[in-house]
Length: 430
Image 1 (cartoon, rainbow, N blue to C red):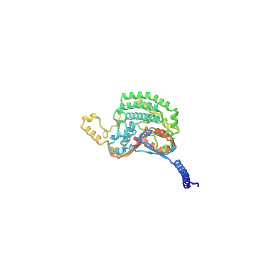
Image 2 (tube, one colour):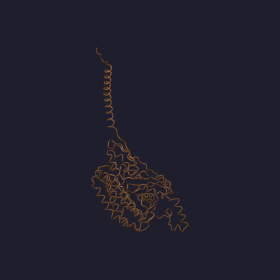
Image 3 (cartoon, rainbow, N blue to C red):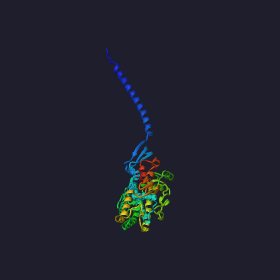
Image 4 (cartoon, helix red, strand yellow):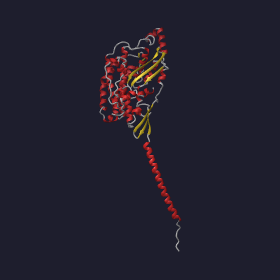
């Protein structure tokens, strides 16, 4: 009699295998659906990243919120204010001359030009006009500041896109300008040299000799920088047709300075609304054609050459005479007279403690600074302190176009575009 084994375990094992195979098929089908859904989500998903505020290519504490579709930017939102110090409110709580050192900290690459623009706004309120020698000295200071700012802007820009050598050339020349600033003002960086109604001191023969030597050598350096970049394939690939700003967009967004002229708009305040006797100087205003990052570089290079022309003319025709306004009521008396006369001592005390006696009214004055139109609006209710002061910062306006021009570019192009705009966050945030 044969004994057969029970079939129940076999049946159970077979059933388990069938169930497992069914589960595996179900899981595979479910995974396929999830994968398909996930793939569809990924295709439609965009990545949001923060560039800055500590990124070295943002040239300060600028944060740009970028929305990316792969490597292509679809949306850009600049976030500013990390360097906000309330300069405009500070100005409303101190005398006009006390605010001069704060203007050094706006575009801190061109403090001399900031000093002059602010002082001329207050002088417009007072109805003052500097003697010819004082105007010529201010022109010299402003064009030195323009060269200094452009040198650092171009050097940093070139280094951002891969050209390290250019930065060494430009920074070497900028150190020479700092030496000139030290001879002229006693300080290298934050000069605070200008006063409402003039300057703290006249230029001397040492300064004239040193700046003449600098002007003889500097054009050669500009040409060397041009030879390094103008036909450099890497530099051209990173800048040509990148960050194009049309003439219409440049005007609509309030761009000024080299960024506006790079887009083909012939507007320079020194020509359109001359101040400090700029109408007497022979110089050209460089204009771009394509409005791209490369054109903005070319405009700044040519502006340095034109600044050399202006400086040479200013030194050659430097007039004699006083450099400051003479107003017995609102300017400080000479120190010798203060030490010898009680009336002059009292007058000195009143002006120093109460400030200049400005009339009621409102004025706006704008100067052609290296970054563009730096303007000061002053609302006065009389006395030595402004009722309201508003700073028209060119870097603030120039950055407003980022949401317009960044979309459509690759992530790597952001560095080149930001460098071509050449902004300073101290001026933007104020």
